[in-house]
Amino acid sequence: MESILFVDDEPKIWQGIKRALHGEPYEMIGVTSGKEALEILEEREIDIIISDEMMPIMTGNELLKICKEKYPEMIRIMLTGKGNLNTAMNAIYDGWIFHYIEKPVKAQNLASVIHVALLIRSLRSDDESKHLVMSLEQQIALLEKYGIEHSLNPQNATEDYESLDDLVE
Image (cartoon, rainbow, N blue to C red; front, side, top):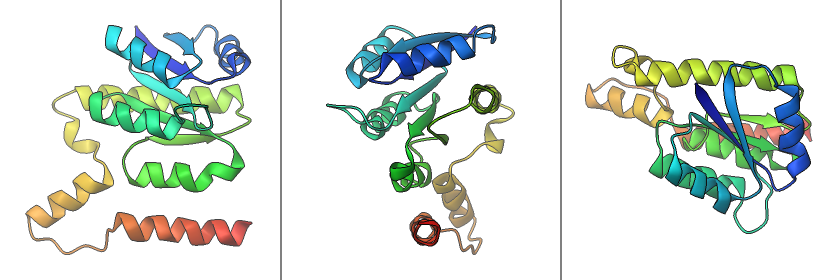
């Protein structure tokens, strides 16, 4: 059975998510800090980690960076408020997270993101499908390896999103 680790310093948030997703075909574990999350990850394999960004001591961004380094096959998702969209977008382009979800989150939307993430996780673990799922950096490296010209640039993509944020605000 697939497992999902929810990390939020407000227990009511992940408890509410757990209740809303009751009956879904995966195990749900909730903790209130990055430190607790890392302890769980040392003990067992987790398929998806969903972490709030704004937490004391260790932010979600810091936690998910560590997870990227130590558990690269685990899917990482960030929960964020409106004020942290730049952080989330930068984390996506840097490859730390697969997706971000803006709070407040609807259970149906979260369930959809989780189902897609589990599908991607299964593709990543299937040797025949690994080439289908690549980070932007991997795509660039592959194109450059074969001398193919491209206009992909993670830095430009991040700058584009920052300017879009300026238009929305």
